[in-house]
Length: 601
Image (spheres, helix red, strand yellow):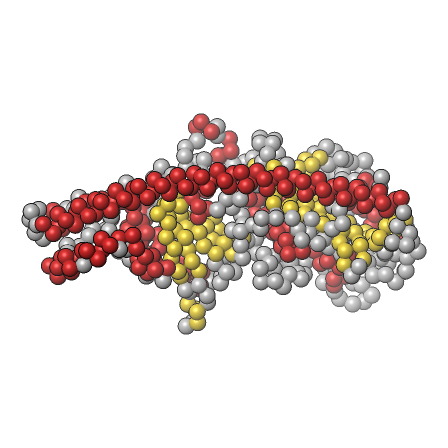
């Protein structure tokens, strides 16, 4: 059973235009009338289906710009939608931008985000669905969402900040997007539908961006949803929505709110772009539990022909949305989950993949002022040296900006093989598409320091994974030998804590020269300053072997503990999946119960 809707008497002075009068359909002075546009039995496709060519439509269709009541005002041309979206070179970056809005809603009670495919009911083509159960948007928030440069996100933890992400990302993925949102604010339950359609704007030959929108409010006195805009505005906008959206009737349109519940937002992107080969850019069918980028060469390889490096997360994230989403956020609350194609995305912490891990504290300076500090986790990948992967994963406000960033390139790459780092750099600003950072002096200083960290770590630890150490140990002096002899007993007693001062130095950002165990056990002849019969050196070598054996024993125990932890985490994730399914089922049942109650009352 569905809630009832009715059209109430509407004030003729209700404003139906958005900010600056440039984005929403005007009530009285708009040159656009739904009756003037030929109706189509199916949802029309854009003039060009390839994204990188879609901005070159026939400019002869465009109306001449006109003034409004003799005054000058700014208009945004439809071509701007396309040129603005070209900031996203990568389709997954656009999806991540939309997902950021759902993650920002965690502070408003969001517990899940859904990314899935659906079929356009008008023509049967694939569409992209993104939905969350956050606070939703009222009419004013919906207008801001569909306008340019408006953002009410003031929290320092919020990922979005420019008020442009929704437009760039949705238009990068497809030519058209329809948004449904339900919100409870100031004790008023409202729901809104908005349409941003590049197809509509270009086919109608408009010289400005027109966004049809309809709004409803639930009236408890009558237990009905009532339109809260003028009659003419409602009729014109609803007519455009039904013509250019995937839904042919008002009933089909409003039925989309059934899965939203009391609050939340649903985004449907349709007329998805094709690649240069004429295939859908987003591949929904190669893996039923994943969304892939069909043009990537790696996705065409069979697993049997792919190397260990090819199968590593650093490479699969380029064409597998599930792989990319698993590391997109540094931290995810336990009560929030991301559903992709009906399956929960498993959170993956890259730092857990590192062995011989160390922590280095970096304090950036700019103009003599300290800009904060950041701790970098750095180590070798567990599969090193088999994997040819290296680089730093740089997050900003919990969001991954640069995955496996190669700060070391060209001839020096062999001096970084397998070295991976993770850090959260909130002192530098990302670009608008959140796929890079602004190239400020602070950014270049960070890049230089990360390069130094890579080389220092490699030089001091490469022997641990089988590479020849590039730094030779200096020959010990007689004074150092005497010092070692005096403190040999103390070192034996405190061998378990010997590494602590070195770790502290690393955390403070200081360079520490740690000798390789192998090079100490088998020192070159040039490093010996006394005959092999020297009793002190023999004692030191024996002690080193004993400590090395003990380290191997501890590492073995650590692996056993890690295996137990992995098993427990797997069981925990399974229970979390069951809990998330129950939450979704409970929300659906509550929604059905509420709708039934509304009708009965």
